[in-house]
Structures are given as C-alpha cells and as structure tokens.
Image (cartoon, rainbow, N blue to C red; front, side, top):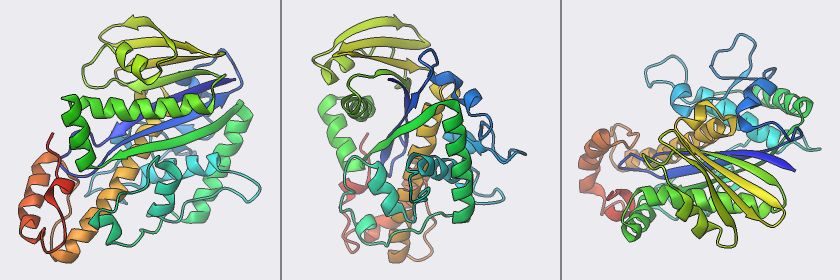
Length: 329
C-alpha cells in the first residue's frame, strides 16, 4: 500500500485564536507516483487557481485562495468549496456524499481533541454550513472529485486536525522554550496517528518547513522511538528522512513552500485555515454580544491589540480569563 500525505498549519503568528495543524492522506495505486503529481492526475476535477472556467475545484495554499474582506463574494468561498468537497469525497458511501451542516459537526469529524469549554464556543450556537455555497451544488462538485479520484486510482484516506488554543499553546511553548515546538508537537501527533492507522504501508509525508529549521531527526526519533531514523538530506531548501518500523517505510519531507509542490499539503493548508476562520467567527460573535459595535478581528498582532484594548473592560463580566484568550508567545 502506498500513501501520500501532507501537513500544514494556519495561525502560527497571531495573538488570538487557535493554531491549527492539519493532515490529509491519500492512497495511490501507482507505487511509483509521489504527492507532487496529484494536481495532474486529478486535472479533470482539480486546478490551482479559483474561478476556473471548467468549474474545477481550486486547491492551493490558503493564502492564495482566501479572499480579501472587501472583495466581491465571501472571503472564504474558495476555501469552503475545496475543503467541504474534499471531505464529501472522503466520506462518500451508500448514503451519498456528506456535506457538513455546521462548524460543530465539521470540528468533531476533524479534530483529534474535543473543543475546550471556552466561553466563546460554549456561549455561542453552532454556525450553519455551508457559509457561501448551495449544499446541492457542493454535493455535485464533490461527486465530480470522487469520480476523478477513482479514475486516477487515488483514494482519500484521512483528514484530521489538531487545534491548540492560546492557553495550551503558552503551556507547551513555555515547557519547551520555543513556540516552534508547538507546531512540531502537533505535527508529530498527526504523523503518529497516520502511521498507527497504516503500519504496513509505505508513506510519503510532506510538510511545510517549520520556521527556518533544517534538522528534524531528534524530533522524529522521539515521536517514533521504535523506528530507525535515517537522514536522507538536510539542506536550506529541504530535509528528508526515512523511518523503518515493521514492514512499512515512512518518509518525511520538510520543504520550503511544500504547499506549492504537494496537493495534500495545500489541502491541509486550506482545511487548517477554514477551521481557524470558523473558530475566530465564534470568538467575534461572543464578544460582539457583550460589546455591541465591536469590529471583528482575525487575531493578528496589530489588530489583535486593538481588539484586546476594546474588550479588556468587559472580560470579567463576560466570564473570560485573559490567559485563555491571549497568547504569551
């Protein structure tokens, strides 16, 4: 069995909201193929850019596909179309292709952990999905993707995510002495999950480079203590490793701009961003109820500080502990 997989994150830099790390994995029938050619193999249903004249699904880095606030149409329309259609194809069965109906059902399907009982999640209702597409239209597009996958000999296997809220992020980073360790911790959880689910498969797992790091051998050895970890290459552009344990081989590739070369990484980037945006929408809804007229925030540092200055006077009344809201790193 040959698996190609990818991981990426959204929300590493902001002051507010979760860091989300996501993994997508596909089984490929052709043992010689790798993750970088999936765009070509799925070209009847998938492309890289939005607004394709053939109506194909855009799968690319989330920064490319997320629209500006003042752009025509919903800023999440391209992310939502790609993520919900891919998940529909993943979940296709005798009952059809499921399109998630709320952010809560989506989170339960993807997250390794239950959502924490933070006030902005517990104190707001589930958001209906899709946000900006007719459900029937997404189901038809998901079916187009399902057919393209089947024709190409590709089967979606897994889509999972780790969401780290500020309090946990601060705790993990503090214990490790580095915010980068949080990203690595989440990535290794997902890598171990993938390996445990398919212990005899040959897996190629591509990841975006974690900051400027070039060496990951020790991190992999800690995550897979029973595996022999071999360094294949460590350069400024890419770091490649091979882990042997049991009958299968796990090859892990940390690359600069991996989302430009590996479809599973790009799809993971989109999924992580979509999940983070849905979580931030709940946070904004909660605080707007307590402070009418409050402008929403995406959580990035400059605007996050503006937002904090406006909500600080109401935190106690809203039942919010500041350390659960704000990142210290």
